[in-house]
Length: 502
Figure 1 (cartoon, rainbow, N blue to C red):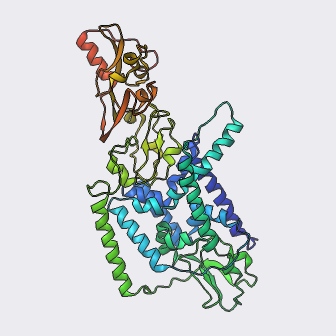
Figure 2 (cartoon, helix red, strand yellow; figure 1 turned 120 degrees about the vertical axis):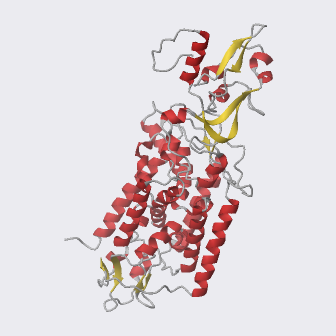
Figure 3 (cartoon, one colour; figure 1 turned 45 degrees about the vertical axis):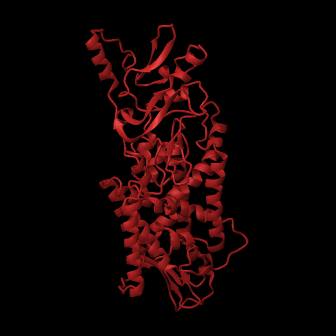
């Protein structure tokens, strides 16, 4: 026979597995398990408005149905930020006080405004409020380096480098996010989940009248307050009304084992239908605010000229479509940053989305991690073949800065690193071999040439990649060179490695 502690123990076991699997999504080199985060409700919900698909709809609908039957178990078992809050709370040895709050108006308006902005094409609210994105910024900045350290300790012959190499970013993003979250948890426990999180609010509406619910038997309850003390979401009130709010209850099951009088039960409840308790004035005010948010989203989203987001002059990941589209969809969860093989994806905040920088690497020609694992649809999924033809930028040359011109040094590093053959070398009249573009239609802006250029990047290298406003499809290299050979009547080269010959 199950004891009263069994539901809580099962919840903790499932939450531990879920948390570990989610962390692997942010561990560079371990993206084989990244499919787990595709079950995240907030990410799937946001992605529906960026790239509708039936699998995404299935995830959203399944989570809603599960919540309707059993309540907000998602918040305590699946949500990584919710689980992290439980972990932080376990270190709060000094204060075990009962918290009392509801914030019904706040959470409804926050959810309505953020969803209205999302529908209008602006993911700004989800960048700030989405629990998965917030957890991602903490994980990439703090947890990911720890996982990489353990990996390198166990497998020193297969070392990994951290995607976070900027100390200012580490302090500003990771420590700041974790410090603010810890302060909220220590003072008000899961206030974020009850009053701020739009995902929790949406699921709470379905959990309010869930088929299986927690309830208090008022005849058995003696108002000792033990259950309310261990409740992280202030869902229990035994002092005044002996009531329990299934809307804000995150199904942690902490209350069941502490009740000595068996006054708390988790069982099937008879459906009760009642009118909403929001006043008419509040409803109208909330509707007006939501309408204003929707109109504002349409007016100021990054695809409009009035947008405050600086999306210009950035090289964005393949599959973004354009700088402005990417800025309107990206929630900065940073899972792409953690899993970038080339280590070129960066995040600086300050009203900028994720972008590419080729100072310490380049966009790997045979890698499509970022578009494959993007959970919000900011990056459209691309096959390896499609990614190889996606122009994310356009390279250019300032030949006067080339070391062959300035120092008379034989180089050619840029041409050697070009995966498409767009950049090649040719002899000049004075005997020097200089780089030139045989066709910029072949260039995909991967940054291989820029990264290989030995010229110091102050202000820029001799070969550099410029951003483009719209990502286009490059010409296929094998077809281009086949046409060139046909025109010049050259024989087809032998292909021993499956690639084309230049």
